[in-house]
Image 1 (cartoon, rainbow, N blue to C red):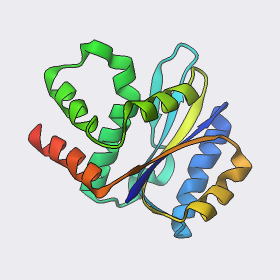
Image 2: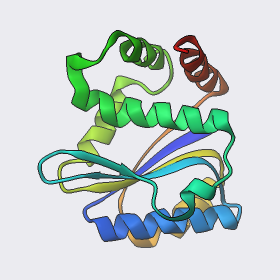
Image 3: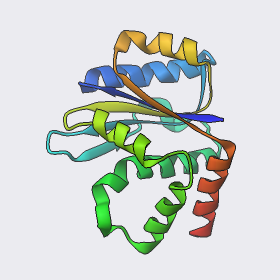
Length: 164
């Protein structure tokens, strides 16, 4: 099963340092990433999603990348788009509601990502939890995590396929 891990910080510098550390942890095989992003919410509440550095060179499978992109959208775009979402996008996110990425998880993520905060968002297809957490303890941050079952991943992939 895959893990969706959000680590929120009060400042960009610690978030960027943790982002770089997560990538190093992949080199040390403590985590296998299906995707990683740096998310910032500016003081006006505007969302910025970045993938600085070598994340583009992760060599992830297309399916993992698509699932990660969809999950990022579900977590960070939907709360901001509200009812303005078109039918196709709405159908996709209705499908996400049938996964373990429930409204409660999304609310916890929104709570830790207040304006002025930043977060590392990692989609891990494999993770050695205890070693991973210990390696990131020095950065502080608030961790919000959920498990995506294989059925969840298939449901997300199916929703993506249906929209084509």
